[in-house]
Length: 68
Image (tube, rainbow, N blue to C red):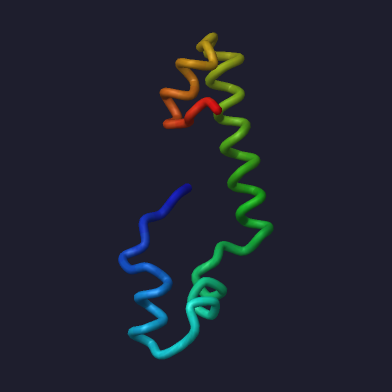
């Protein structure tokens, strides 16, 4: 799930007097959690398409995805 941060990492680093990389490390989602969330997201998309009978175009539009 994408979260909008109230300030950028660059701005937070400037305000706190630390490096931008440190801010990113503090704010990062742990890898195991990120992988779990992505797996859940893929399953939701698959279910919407396969079990819901929606086309890939409809599925992409429903989830705000673009086709490249």
